[in-house]
Amino acid sequence: MHDIDTVTAATIEKAAERLAGVVTRTPLEPSARLSSRVDAQVWVKREDLQTVRSYKIRGAYNFIVQLDEDVRARGVVCASAGNHAQGVAYACRRLGANGRVYVPGTTPRQKRERIATLGGAHIEVVVVGETYEDAFAAANEDAQRSGATLVPAFDDVRTVAGQGTVALEVVEQLSFVPDVVVVPVGGGGLLAGVGSWLRERHPEVRIIGVEPAGAACMAAALESGHPVRLPALDSFVDGAAVREAGSVTYPLVRESGAELTAVAEGAVCTEMLAMYQSDGIIAEPAGALASASLGTVVDVEPGQTVVCLVSGGNNDVSRYSEILERSLMHEGLKHYFLVSFPQEPGALRRFLEQVLGPEDDITRFEYVKRTNRERGPALVGIEIARPADLPGLLARMDASPLQVERIEPGSPLFHFLL
Image 1 (cartoon, rainbow, N blue to C red):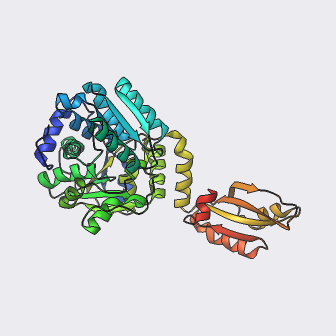
Image 2 (cartoon, rainbow, N blue to C red):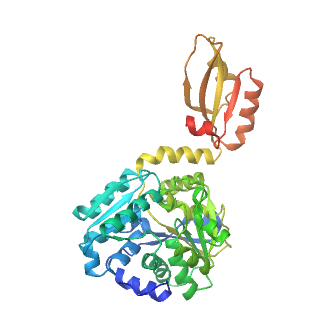
Image 3 (tube, rainbow, N blue to C red):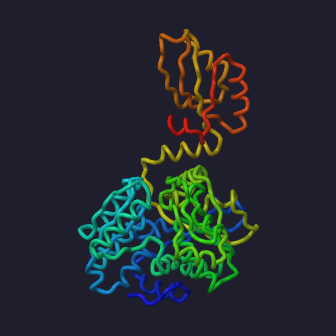
């Protein structure tokens, strides 16, 4: 069993010794695109190239390897949005332990299949509920019933110490200390580990934690003085969609002096596409959090050395249509309207000629002609070439005889229709 009740630089360095030869020493690469964006020297730590395509193996293995043999023989259970479960699956197979992993229904199929592949006969995958909290409740109940050990995704000193080993590698690979380290945040395990090591060994480093705007649980905890449960949660950034910060991670993050900020989910999508198209990096939403913040919600000084942690690359290719849609909307290039067309020949042609601009494109059109009414509604999606084209489009709609209602992204109608 472990004999520590907090996380220090020494416990993180001890974890690094346990992980030697188990985890991949992932590349630290310069990013010309990000460097140009903020006029600084930006490096990306490629944890998407880790053994299980995320940093989560570090914490999971460091936890399980410290269990006594008789405890390990009773098995382990965990809850995860996908990446932690892959780490647990890999650790179980390598250490000869058996486990069950509980994942919410929002976990991409690609992650579920990877969990089963990595764990082989040692792992059973159970899908339950829609959020991480649902999965955690089921895993906790399993542990109490079966006597298996619950492996926390972030809220345990052994897990946190394992995640913190990323910071050691960064400094060793650079051969000097960076000015700024930008870390994605879900429940806070990675930030707590990285922040704890840097605060003790290199306190001059500026540490920035980046949360999804729809799941900013750590910022809420820091503001309240203790972990609080978010009333609403956007689960799109599934690897960081946590409703409540951990009781272990919160004080560690607070003591690290890390700055917390948040990035809109649409901005994450834009960054994911840029990483794919410009850098050849397939990042999951949480993996794009850190770099998405640069030059948008995070400013750095010219010439500084900045390290962004790419936390994972377990993205389901089937999600790219939604990612593109969210990105276009965030960039102000995609808009939706309800247009009431008169039931007469030529109505659509007049709309195309009189309302649409030369570079506007209809990307969605759903219309049902109702012969017993004078007008028929249509859902129209329009993509414009640049955000500055929107006022002209709206003015032409106002000037036309058509009845047009713009569907705002935050409205209930938007979520219902789209």
